[in-house]
Length: 255
Figure: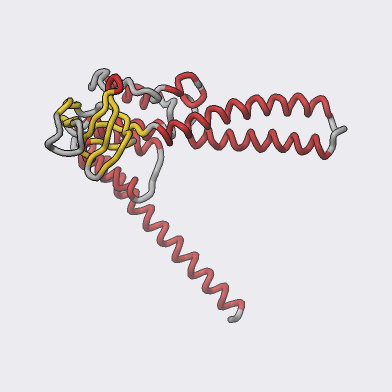
């Protein structure tokens, strides 16, 4: 195959890829515009559904999740609103509007189900409250690489500004250690504490994973729970004061 033919094929592939990308962007812009129109018309459910299609299409960011939460809040679906506000906090935990809406939405449920062990473990570490999780992980990686880079440099050239490099490596080591602790806690909590929210008006909590099992409680829409087990069409949850029971899978969504 000649060089000209190879270049022509490459150009055609690039043009096709750019055209597909442009078409996708146009579709997403149209979808977002339709969501804004629906919101202005008071069709909050339709607006949320349109925005959720963007998520299904691969778009993932804090402002989008926040907008979906606002739509669900206006729609009166407290559990869905809390779910999307929680997901938005992954990207923008320090956003004041997000925090205010999240607190307000939680107040609509009361305290039931919010005292979940492990859900507030990060309160002892201030940094994850102000940095998004991706930013925290990236900062941890960069600081750790800088620390090891300085150590390697000191090893290879031990006489090059030894005192200054020693102080720098100590400082970087302390910062890296703190960041690693924060990142480890965040990763551990995300892996071990599967928090979710009740997303129906009343969720029946039973002693077993059948409709005939004894009814323990009725949890309202928006109640925060921890998912501790799964079996067929039911999930086992832990809620207020570490009570446990089974609810139908469609009654609760994990954040």
